[in-house]
Length: 265
Ligand SMILES: Cc1cc2nc3c(=O)[nH]c(=O)nc-3n(C[C@H](O)[C@H](O)[C@H](O)COP(=O)(O)O)c2cc1C
Image (cartoon, rainbow, N blue to C red):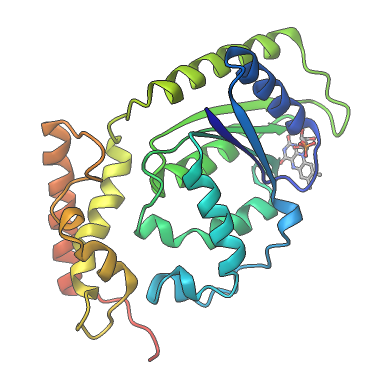
């Protein structure tokens, strides 16, 4: 299995210890597993400027396209990702948030359908769960097929000693993750994923080529395979979830008749 270890934290601190434990367990389960590392701080990704070109014209027009495309290509290549970040003020640290800002457009046009991830964070005492939920929610929104969450209170600034209980948790999590990733089984999307997916599918009708405010969303959702399907055609969706998704598709379609997101031309 090919894994990407992505560190969104500005340093290799307490959270990194957990990442390395999970990595060690994954390596022991399967010696052929390979790991690549991205330290987000090394990429010197500038702040998102808020130009909205990714939404309107496509992410190729992002002023930081080269860096972002390297990250996207890397995630496309791998089977599984360990995504680490620190919890600052009960949320992901700013470096990570900056990456999320650069990939917000993918909430409108999800991309990583075959990917699975473990989201890892540590906090001093409180806030790890909300930080992990925030990142896992974003990853699922941009298409990730499944996200495991690992939130730990370190009770330390920079002197975290991982206890036996947490080591056992890391081992169990690595086993579950390896089994899931190696089985290549695709999970069906949750209701929470189907809601925005189908709202965007419906609303995109207002932004197709030739409309007053055409956008890249309109192009993406015009693909006949995508426009007619409740979720990405790669993923099996049971009938009851299809019905659920279609309801939100029609709500999106209706909304597009009453509201248009404008931009300066
Ligand atoms: C800027 C900053 C903000 C923090 N915010 C919180 C917080 O909201 N809640 C908390 O319990 N600990 C907080 N902490 C403590 C860290 O979350 C904790 O030490 C964590 O284990 C550090 O992980 P790291 O070494 O991987 O960066 C904060 C630490 C820093 C430096």
